[in-house]
Length: 236
Image 1: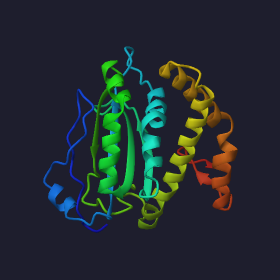
Image 2: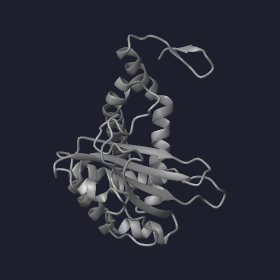
Image 3: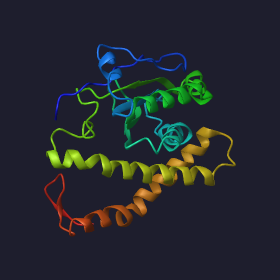
């Protein structure tokens, strides 16, 4: 990958939902780019664990549907690539939902402003569910490279094409989450609603995703078997 300007690390938010401001040594370089130049921008939401140490994974569905998906839809004409990333290992980062967007910097500013003005963030913080949220860029000097968020262990061709694949997956997931949430919109308690959404989504993955997703993906690759972790060959 070519060496290009990295998006500046922006102010870490801890106790309030204020709009992040640019900071860091590369801020001037990023600001020197054309206003229409897409760059990678990340919004990270770090959640507290339950008292028993488990991750409240339903919060990913809540924040994605109530905050982040609408932010993407509001700027879909200017966003070239986007995706969600979920993780919750027992490590210093812990449970975190990330929205990654490849769009001009002004889109990032508008998304950050709209998120900061949404009272749900402050509510989740006050209730102890949300630890912090922040906006930053890729940890490599590749802010303008569409493939910058791909795994470097993959071939260059796969790195180039994968962002388009995972954007479709994220759109599919977000659309299902929204449909399930709307079906439960009479439930006023957001936490109860999105726990039920998570149950429905996991049931879909368990019972129906093999044909709708894995089988048709396998079909695109000629129904050839793939090697599983234990060395066995699987078709879907």
